[in-house]
Length: 71
Image (tube, rainbow, N blue to C red; front, top):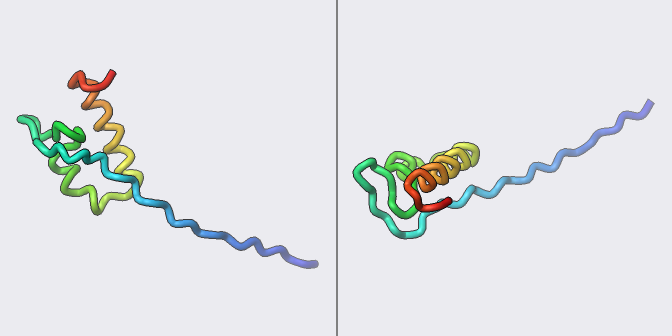
């Protein structure tokens, strides 16, 4: 009986891009007025996994919406 061996190709996932738009100013709540990340999220971005980055981007969208910047 012959066995079939399927090879797996591992494709490296590209890093999720930073939402930075070079308008870097933290407001009184420690949220950037340009990208809507917190100061901690900005400082940790380089070490975050893509899943963590996607979660931050969702939070940024929610913050922007709550601040009336997007609808």
